[in-house]
Amino acid sequence: MSALLIALALLAQDAPAAEAVQDAPAAVDETPFPTGAPRDDYGLVSWCYGALAGYLDLKPQVMPEVRRIEAAFRAPGRTLAQDLKIYDDIEKEGRANLKLFARAIEAAEKASPRPIAPIGAEALRKGRNTWSAAPNLPKARLAQEWMSWTLPARCAPTAESLETRAKLLGVAFDPLAESPDSATPES
Image (cartoon, rainbow, N blue to C red; front, side, top):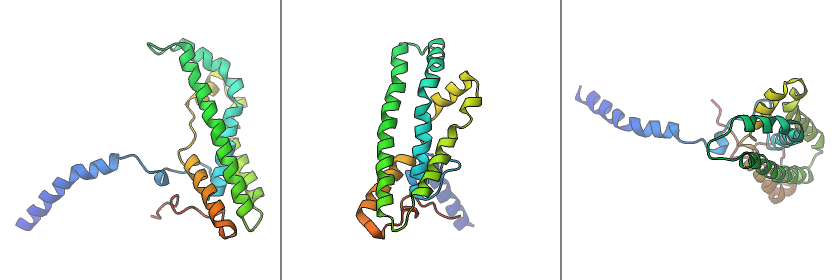
């Protein structure tokens, strides 16, 4: 009986540590894949390129409504110009990410022993289709969706890894394989 009590006491001591582990932010390799995105690194980076390009292409269309929303719902102590500058900063970062994705895609295609560009083109199309409902949405709804969208956390680190592996491995590189750090454990 005393062994059972000791085990329960030890278990109770470990509970806060277990809760802390559960509350810790997930590593990039544990972040979920975007819905509908390919699981291989080359396909994912191509998908990310398409989704981000679609997002950036919508900026001129949504900005009049974004300005109206930002003007109507002012944050205390901030100017409208400060709030709108955020969207310019997001665009700048997005353009830099597009360049990273393009480099990774190109490096993978050059290193691949077989032609993979059609696979990448299809993944890019699927990523761009993330925004296919845009023409059918009311202006305010589209602006809200656009304002709240973020690039999936997996995209940039996967592109960096893909580019590095493609350049290092050359013809031994398999662009359709998952990187060791992006593989998810099987349940």
